[in-house]
Length: 425
Image (cartoon, rainbow, N blue to C red; front, side, top):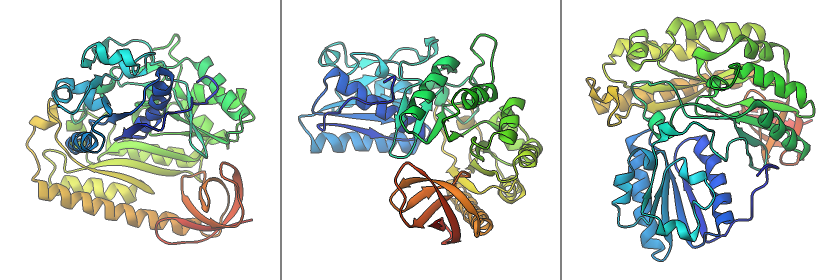
Protein backbone atom coordinates (compact mmCIF):
# COMPACT_ATOMS: atom_id res chain seq x y z
CA UNK A 1 0.00 0.00 0.00
CA UNK A 2 2.91 2.35 -0.52
CA UNK A 3 0.88 4.50 -2.90
CA UNK A 4 -2.07 4.72 -0.53
CA UNK A 5 -4.24 2.43 -2.68
CA UNK A 6 -6.07 -0.59 -1.33
CA UNK A 7 -6.56 -3.88 -3.19
CA UNK A 8 -10.05 -4.63 -4.39
CA UNK A 9 -11.92 -6.37 -1.58
CA UNK A 10 -14.18 -9.40 -1.73
CA UNK A 11 -17.71 -8.26 -0.94
CA UNK A 12 -18.27 -11.55 0.93
CA UNK A 13 -15.73 -10.34 3.52
CA UNK A 14 -17.13 -7.93 6.10
CA UNK A 15 -14.91 -6.07 8.57
CA UNK A 16 -16.78 -4.90 11.68
CA UNK A 17 -15.04 -2.14 13.64
CA UNK A 18 -15.41 -1.19 17.30
CA UNK A 19 -13.77 1.69 19.13
CA UNK A 20 -11.37 4.43 18.14
CA UNK A 21 -10.51 6.12 14.87
CA UNK A 22 -7.25 4.21 14.82
CA UNK A 23 -9.21 0.96 14.76
CA UNK A 24 -11.25 2.32 11.87
CA UNK A 25 -8.09 3.10 9.92
CA UNK A 26 -6.63 -0.32 10.70
CA UNK A 27 -9.82 -1.97 9.54
CA UNK A 28 -9.08 -0.59 6.10
CA UNK A 29 -5.71 -2.32 6.30
CA UNK A 30 -7.52 -5.51 7.36
CA UNK A 31 -9.71 -5.30 4.26
CA UNK A 32 -6.59 -5.03 2.15
CA UNK A 33 -4.97 -7.90 4.05
CA UNK A 34 -8.03 -10.10 3.47
CA UNK A 35 -7.99 -9.32 -0.24
CA UNK A 36 -4.27 -10.01 -0.55
CA UNK A 37 -4.63 -13.30 1.33
CA UNK A 38 -7.60 -14.44 -0.76
CA UNK A 39 -10.05 -14.61 2.15
CA UNK A 40 -13.71 -15.00 1.19
CA UNK A 41 -17.03 -15.58 2.96
CA UNK A 42 -15.85 -14.22 6.31
CA UNK A 43 -16.62 -11.67 9.00
CA UNK A 44 -13.63 -10.03 10.70
CA UNK A 45 -14.22 -8.27 14.01
CA UNK A 46 -11.71 -5.56 14.93
CA UNK A 47 -12.47 -5.18 18.63
CA UNK A 48 -11.98 -2.47 21.25
CA UNK A 49 -11.14 -2.91 24.94
CA UNK A 50 -11.40 0.65 26.22
CA UNK A 51 -14.67 -0.10 28.06
CA UNK A 52 -16.43 -3.22 29.27
CA UNK A 53 -19.41 -2.19 27.17
CA UNK A 54 -17.28 -2.26 24.00
CA UNK A 55 -16.23 -5.85 24.77
CA UNK A 56 -19.83 -6.86 25.51
CA UNK A 57 -21.02 -5.36 22.24
CA UNK A 58 -18.32 -7.21 20.31
CA UNK A 59 -19.30 -10.56 21.80
CA UNK A 60 -22.96 -9.85 21.06
CA UNK A 61 -22.15 -8.93 17.45
CA UNK A 62 -20.09 -12.11 16.99
CA UNK A 63 -23.02 -14.28 18.09
CA UNK A 64 -25.38 -12.38 15.81
CA UNK A 65 -23.01 -12.78 12.85
CA UNK A 66 -22.87 -16.54 13.36
CA UNK A 67 -26.66 -16.73 13.34
CA UNK A 68 -26.95 -14.64 10.20
CA UNK A 69 -24.00 -16.19 8.31
CA UNK A 70 -23.67 -19.76 9.57
CA UNK A 71 -21.25 -20.77 6.80
CA UNK A 72 -18.89 -17.78 7.13
CA UNK A 73 -15.53 -17.87 8.84
CA UNK A 74 -15.45 -15.58 11.87
CA UNK A 75 -12.16 -13.92 12.79
CA UNK A 76 -11.66 -11.80 15.92
CA UNK A 77 -8.76 -9.38 16.33
CA UNK A 78 -8.09 -5.94 17.86
CA UNK A 79 -7.40 -4.83 21.41
CA UNK A 80 -10.03 -6.94 23.20
CA UNK A 81 -8.76 -10.06 21.43
CA UNK A 82 -5.17 -9.14 22.28
CA UNK A 83 -5.94 -8.64 25.97
CA UNK A 84 -8.22 -11.64 26.50
CA UNK A 85 -7.67 -14.09 23.63
CA UNK A 86 -8.85 -17.09 25.66
CA UNK A 87 -12.31 -15.61 26.16
CA UNK A 88 -12.84 -15.14 22.42
CA UNK A 89 -11.16 -18.44 21.59
CA UNK A 90 -13.66 -20.17 23.86
CA UNK A 91 -16.62 -18.82 21.90
CA UNK A 92 -18.09 -21.57 19.74
CA UNK A 93 -18.89 -18.99 17.05
CA UNK A 94 -15.24 -17.99 16.51
CA UNK A 95 -12.92 -19.69 14.00
CA UNK A 96 -9.74 -17.65 14.53
CA UNK A 97 -8.39 -15.14 17.06
CA UNK A 98 -5.52 -12.92 15.91
CA UNK A 99 -3.43 -10.53 18.00
CA UNK A 100 -2.78 -6.93 17.01
CA UNK A 101 0.66 -7.83 15.67
CA UNK A 102 -0.48 -10.96 13.86
CA UNK A 103 -3.40 -9.29 12.05
CA UNK A 104 -1.06 -7.21 9.89
CA UNK A 105 1.27 -9.97 8.70
CA UNK A 106 1.19 -11.50 5.22
CA UNK A 107 -0.91 -14.66 5.20
CA UNK A 108 -2.68 -13.77 8.46
CA UNK A 109 -6.06 -14.24 6.79
CA UNK A 110 -5.09 -16.88 4.24
CA UNK A 111 -6.82 -20.24 4.02
CA UNK A 112 -3.88 -21.93 5.74
CA UNK A 113 -4.17 -19.56 8.71
CA UNK A 114 -7.22 -21.45 9.92
CA UNK A 115 -5.17 -24.65 10.21
CA UNK A 116 -2.47 -23.14 12.45
CA UNK A 117 -4.42 -23.08 15.68
CA UNK A 118 -7.55 -21.32 16.81
CA UNK A 119 -5.73 -18.59 18.80
CA UNK A 120 -2.63 -16.81 17.48
CA UNK A 121 -1.78 -13.99 19.87
CA UNK A 122 1.81 -13.19 20.83
CA UNK A 123 3.05 -11.04 23.71
CA UNK A 124 2.50 -7.51 22.40
CA UNK A 125 5.27 -6.14 24.62
CA UNK A 126 7.82 -8.19 22.70
CA UNK A 127 6.99 -6.20 19.58
CA UNK A 128 9.75 -3.69 18.90
CA UNK A 129 9.16 -2.80 15.27
CA UNK A 130 6.33 -0.77 13.83
CA UNK A 131 3.51 -2.86 12.40
CA UNK A 132 3.68 -3.49 8.63
CA UNK A 133 0.61 -1.35 7.96
CA UNK A 134 2.12 1.73 9.62
CA UNK A 135 2.85 4.64 7.31
CA UNK A 136 0.26 3.41 4.83
CA UNK A 137 -2.11 6.18 3.82
CA UNK A 138 -5.69 5.04 4.33
CA UNK A 139 -8.14 7.21 2.41
CA UNK A 140 -11.73 8.08 2.88
CA UNK A 141 -13.49 10.17 0.26
CA UNK A 142 -12.15 13.47 1.58
CA UNK A 143 -8.82 12.96 3.34
CA UNK A 144 -6.10 10.43 4.09
CA UNK A 145 -4.74 9.15 7.38
CA UNK A 146 -1.14 8.21 8.03
CA UNK A 147 -0.53 6.09 11.13
CA UNK A 148 2.85 7.28 12.33
CA UNK A 149 2.93 5.59 15.74
CA UNK A 150 1.42 2.71 17.70
CA UNK A 151 1.41 1.60 21.32
CA UNK A 152 1.85 3.58 24.55
CA UNK A 153 4.58 3.74 27.20
CA UNK A 154 2.36 5.32 29.86
CA UNK A 155 0.27 3.45 32.40
CA UNK A 156 -2.78 5.51 33.30
CA UNK A 157 -4.62 3.69 36.07
CA UNK A 158 -7.90 3.41 34.12
CA UNK A 159 -6.48 2.25 30.78
CA UNK A 160 -5.94 -1.21 29.30
CA UNK A 161 -4.84 0.02 25.87
CA UNK A 162 -1.07 -0.56 26.41
CA UNK A 163 -1.90 -4.22 27.00
CA UNK A 164 -3.67 -4.31 23.65
CA UNK A 165 -1.20 -2.19 21.70
CA UNK A 166 2.13 -2.72 23.45
CA UNK A 167 4.82 -0.12 24.01
CA UNK A 168 5.22 2.90 21.75
CA UNK A 169 6.75 2.30 18.31
CA UNK A 170 7.41 5.06 15.80
CA UNK A 171 7.42 5.03 12.03
CA UNK A 172 10.55 6.37 10.31
CA UNK A 173 10.40 10.07 9.46
CA UNK A 174 11.64 9.64 5.89
CA UNK A 175 9.01 7.01 5.11
CA UNK A 176 6.26 9.15 6.64
CA UNK A 177 7.28 12.17 4.57
CA UNK A 178 7.39 10.07 1.41
CA UNK A 179 3.93 8.65 2.12
CA UNK A 180 2.50 12.13 2.64
CA UNK A 181 4.19 13.29 -0.58
CA UNK A 182 2.61 10.44 -2.54
CA UNK A 183 -0.82 11.17 -1.09
CA UNK A 184 -0.53 14.87 -1.92
CA UNK A 185 0.62 13.96 -5.41
CA UNK A 186 -2.47 11.81 -5.80
CA UNK A 187 -4.68 14.82 -5.10
CA UNK A 188 -5.34 14.39 -1.37
CA UNK A 189 -5.95 17.82 0.12
CA UNK A 190 -5.78 16.95 3.81
CA UNK A 191 -3.64 14.38 5.62
CA UNK A 192 -4.22 13.41 9.26
CA UNK A 193 -1.33 12.07 11.35
CA UNK A 194 -2.62 9.46 13.75
CA UNK A 195 -1.47 7.00 16.41
CA UNK A 196 -2.22 5.69 19.90
CA UNK A 197 0.01 8.26 21.68
CA UNK A 198 0.88 10.67 18.90
CA UNK A 199 3.14 13.00 20.86
CA UNK A 200 5.42 10.12 21.84
CA UNK A 201 6.43 9.75 18.19
CA UNK A 202 10.21 9.71 17.85
CA UNK A 203 11.13 8.78 21.42
CA UNK A 204 12.32 5.35 20.24
CA UNK A 205 14.11 6.62 17.11
CA UNK A 206 17.78 7.61 16.79
CA UNK A 207 18.26 11.17 18.02
CA UNK A 208 14.79 11.14 19.66
CA UNK A 209 13.13 13.58 17.24
CA UNK A 210 9.88 15.23 18.32
CA UNK A 211 6.43 15.32 16.77
CA UNK A 212 6.93 19.03 16.12
CA UNK A 213 10.09 18.30 14.15
CA UNK A 214 8.23 15.71 12.08
CA UNK A 215 5.38 18.13 11.38
CA UNK A 216 7.88 20.84 10.37
CA UNK A 217 9.67 18.41 8.07
CA UNK A 218 6.45 17.32 6.37
CA UNK A 219 5.30 20.89 5.77
CA UNK A 220 8.71 21.91 4.44
CA UNK A 221 9.27 18.91 2.17
CA UNK A 222 5.70 18.54 0.90
CA UNK A 223 4.75 22.12 -0.02
CA UNK A 224 2.02 20.83 -2.34
CA UNK A 225 -0.03 19.52 0.64
CA UNK A 226 -2.67 22.16 1.48
CA UNK A 227 -3.52 20.95 4.99
CA UNK A 228 -2.00 18.75 7.70
CA UNK A 229 -4.02 17.76 10.76
CA UNK A 230 -3.17 16.03 14.03
CA UNK A 231 -5.38 13.49 15.78
CA UNK A 232 -5.72 13.32 19.58
CA UNK A 233 -2.59 14.36 21.49
CA UNK A 234 -1.36 14.30 25.09
CA UNK A 235 -1.28 17.78 26.60
CA UNK A 236 1.79 16.85 28.66
CA UNK A 237 3.97 16.43 25.57
CA UNK A 238 3.46 19.39 23.25
CA UNK A 239 7.00 20.37 22.30
CA UNK A 240 8.42 23.77 21.33
CA UNK A 241 8.73 22.79 17.65
CA UNK A 242 5.05 21.88 17.50
CA UNK A 243 4.15 25.18 19.15
CA UNK A 244 6.26 27.01 16.57
CA UNK A 245 4.53 25.15 13.74
CA UNK A 246 1.14 26.18 15.10
CA UNK A 247 2.33 29.78 15.22
CA UNK A 248 3.97 29.92 11.80
CA UNK A 249 2.39 27.26 9.58
CA UNK A 250 -1.10 28.10 8.38
CA UNK A 251 -1.26 24.72 6.64
CA UNK A 252 -1.24 23.02 10.06
CA UNK A 253 -4.91 22.84 11.01
CA UNK A 254 -5.81 25.10 13.96
CA UNK A 255 -7.34 22.34 16.06
CA UNK A 256 -6.01 20.23 18.92
CA UNK A 257 -7.91 17.40 20.56
CA UNK A 258 -6.40 17.03 24.02
CA UNK A 259 -6.37 13.92 26.18
CA UNK A 260 -7.23 15.81 29.39
CA UNK A 261 -9.48 13.20 31.11
CA UNK A 262 -10.22 15.35 34.19
CA UNK A 263 -10.01 18.86 35.60
CA UNK A 264 -9.34 18.03 39.25
CA UNK A 265 -5.77 17.61 40.49
CA UNK A 266 -6.47 14.76 42.91
CA UNK A 267 -8.32 12.79 40.23
CA UNK A 268 -5.56 13.47 37.71
CA UNK A 269 -3.03 12.17 40.25
CA UNK A 270 -5.09 9.03 40.88
CA UNK A 271 -5.41 8.56 37.12
CA UNK A 272 -1.61 8.82 36.94
CA UNK A 273 -1.83 11.55 34.37
CA UNK A 274 1.23 13.71 33.80
CA UNK A 275 -0.37 17.15 33.88
CA UNK A 276 -2.25 19.26 36.39
CA UNK A 277 -5.37 21.37 35.95
CA UNK A 278 -3.24 24.53 35.90
CA UNK A 279 -0.94 23.09 33.26
CA UNK A 280 -3.94 22.34 31.05
CA UNK A 281 -5.11 25.94 31.34
CA UNK A 282 -1.60 27.29 30.77
CA UNK A 283 -1.27 25.15 27.66
CA UNK A 284 -4.44 26.35 25.97
CA UNK A 285 -3.53 29.95 26.85
CA UNK A 286 -0.05 29.53 25.38
CA UNK A 287 -1.33 27.96 22.16
CA UNK A 288 -4.04 30.59 21.74
CA UNK A 289 -1.36 33.22 22.19
CA UNK A 290 0.42 32.04 19.04
CA UNK A 291 -2.64 30.82 17.09
CA UNK A 292 -5.74 32.84 18.02
CA UNK A 293 -8.02 30.98 15.58
CA UNK A 294 -7.38 27.58 17.19
CA UNK A 295 -10.15 25.43 18.66
CA UNK A 296 -9.76 22.73 21.28
CA UNK A 297 -11.49 19.44 21.85
CA UNK A 298 -10.92 17.11 24.79
CA UNK A 299 -11.53 13.65 26.17
CA UNK A 300 -13.06 13.77 29.66
CA UNK A 301 -14.03 10.93 32.01
CA UNK A 302 -17.02 11.26 34.34
CA UNK A 303 -17.28 9.33 37.58
CA UNK A 304 -13.69 8.18 38.02
CA UNK A 305 -13.25 6.17 41.26
CA UNK A 306 -13.17 8.34 44.43
CA UNK A 307 -14.53 11.34 42.53
CA UNK A 308 -16.87 13.39 44.71
CA UNK A 309 -19.13 16.27 43.65
CA UNK A 310 -16.49 18.91 44.35
CA UNK A 311 -13.93 17.05 42.23
CA UNK A 312 -16.45 16.61 39.43
CA UNK A 313 -17.29 20.31 39.62
CA UNK A 314 -13.64 21.08 38.80
CA UNK A 315 -13.86 18.94 35.66
CA UNK A 316 -17.18 20.50 34.72
CA UNK A 317 -15.75 24.00 35.14
CA UNK A 318 -12.74 23.10 32.99
CA UNK A 319 -14.95 23.05 29.89
CA UNK A 320 -15.59 26.78 30.17
CA UNK A 321 -12.33 27.75 31.89
CA UNK A 322 -10.27 26.19 29.06
CA UNK A 323 -12.63 27.37 26.35
CA UNK A 324 -13.17 23.86 24.99
CA UNK A 325 -15.39 23.52 21.91
CA UNK A 326 -15.70 19.78 21.28
CA UNK A 327 -16.01 17.09 23.96
CA UNK A 328 -15.72 13.32 23.97
CA UNK A 329 -17.30 12.31 27.29
CA UNK A 330 -16.75 8.84 28.72
CA UNK A 331 -18.62 7.54 31.75
CA UNK A 332 -15.97 5.68 33.76
CA UNK A 333 -16.01 1.93 33.17
CA UNK A 334 -13.81 -0.32 35.35
CA UNK A 335 -11.48 -2.53 33.34
CA UNK A 336 -10.30 -5.75 35.01
CA UNK A 337 -6.63 -5.72 35.92
CA UNK A 338 -6.27 -1.94 36.05
CA UNK A 339 -5.44 -0.13 39.33
CA UNK A 340 -8.53 2.07 39.02
CA UNK A 341 -10.78 -1.00 39.06
CA UNK A 342 -9.56 -1.70 42.62
CA UNK A 343 -10.28 1.84 43.86
CA UNK A 344 -13.55 2.80 45.61
CA UNK A 345 -16.12 3.08 42.83
CA UNK A 346 -18.64 5.85 42.25
CA UNK A 347 -22.22 4.47 42.15
CA UNK A 348 -23.33 3.88 38.56
CA UNK A 349 -26.33 6.24 38.72
CA UNK A 350 -23.97 9.06 39.79
CA UNK A 351 -21.55 8.18 36.98
CA UNK A 352 -24.33 8.36 34.39
CA UNK A 353 -25.67 11.61 35.85
CA UNK A 354 -22.24 13.27 35.77
CA UNK A 355 -21.63 12.11 32.21
CA UNK A 356 -24.96 13.62 31.18
CA UNK A 357 -24.10 16.93 32.88
CA UNK A 358 -20.69 16.96 31.24
CA UNK A 359 -22.24 16.32 27.83
CA UNK A 360 -24.69 19.17 28.44
CA UNK A 361 -21.74 21.45 29.21
CA UNK A 362 -20.16 20.25 25.98
CA UNK A 363 -23.32 21.07 24.04
CA UNK A 364 -23.33 24.60 25.49
CA UNK A 365 -19.62 25.00 24.67
CA UNK A 366 -20.27 23.97 21.08
CA UNK A 367 -23.03 26.58 20.76
CA UNK A 368 -20.65 29.25 22.05
CA UNK A 369 -18.07 28.12 19.51
CA UNK A 370 -20.60 28.16 16.67
CA UNK A 371 -21.79 31.64 17.66
CA UNK A 372 -18.23 32.88 17.11
CA UNK A 373 -18.09 31.38 13.62
CA UNK A 374 -21.02 33.28 12.11
CA UNK A 375 -19.83 35.75 9.48
CA UNK A 376 -16.43 34.13 8.97
CA UNK A 377 -15.00 33.33 5.54
CA UNK A 378 -13.25 29.96 5.64
CA UNK A 379 -11.64 27.31 3.44
CA UNK A 380 -13.44 24.05 4.27
CA UNK A 381 -12.73 20.50 3.17
CA UNK A 382 -15.80 18.96 1.56
CA UNK A 383 -16.39 15.56 3.23
CA UNK A 384 -19.52 14.58 1.32
CA UNK A 385 -22.27 16.29 -0.61
CA UNK A 386 -23.49 19.23 1.45
CA UNK A 387 -21.14 18.58 4.40
CA UNK A 388 -17.69 20.05 5.00
CA UNK A 389 -15.16 20.51 7.80
CA UNK A 390 -13.52 23.83 8.70
CA UNK A 391 -9.81 23.97 9.53
CA UNK A 392 -10.73 24.22 13.24
CA UNK A 393 -12.82 21.01 12.98
CA UNK A 394 -16.20 22.74 12.89
CA UNK A 395 -18.71 20.65 10.94
CA UNK A 396 -20.50 22.61 8.24
CA UNK A 397 -23.71 22.08 6.32
CA UNK A 398 -23.42 24.11 3.12
CA UNK A 399 -25.32 25.06 0.02
CA UNK A 400 -23.77 25.50 -3.38
CA UNK A 401 -21.61 23.39 -5.70
CA UNK A 402 -18.41 21.92 -4.28
CA UNK A 403 -16.70 18.61 -5.15
CA UNK A 404 -15.97 16.05 -2.44
CA UNK A 405 -12.35 16.08 -1.33
CA UNK A 406 -11.67 19.67 -2.35
CA UNK A 407 -10.97 22.66 -0.11
CA UNK A 408 -13.62 25.24 -0.95
CA UNK A 409 -14.16 28.87 0.04
CA UNK A 410 -17.32 29.34 2.11
CA UNK A 411 -18.99 31.94 4.29
CA UNK A 412 -20.64 30.87 7.55
CA UNK A 413 -24.09 32.41 7.78
CA UNK A 414 -25.53 30.69 10.86
CA UNK A 415 -25.76 27.44 12.81
CA UNK A 416 -28.27 24.96 14.21
CA UNK A 417 -26.55 24.32 17.54
CA UNK A 418 -24.69 21.29 16.23
CA UNK A 419 -22.97 22.49 13.08
CA UNK A 420 -22.39 25.68 11.14
CA UNK A 421 -24.41 26.70 8.08
CA UNK A 422 -22.49 28.10 5.13
CA UNK A 423 -22.74 29.19 1.53
CA UNK A 424 -20.14 28.48 -1.11
CA UNK A 425 -18.51 31.74 -2.13
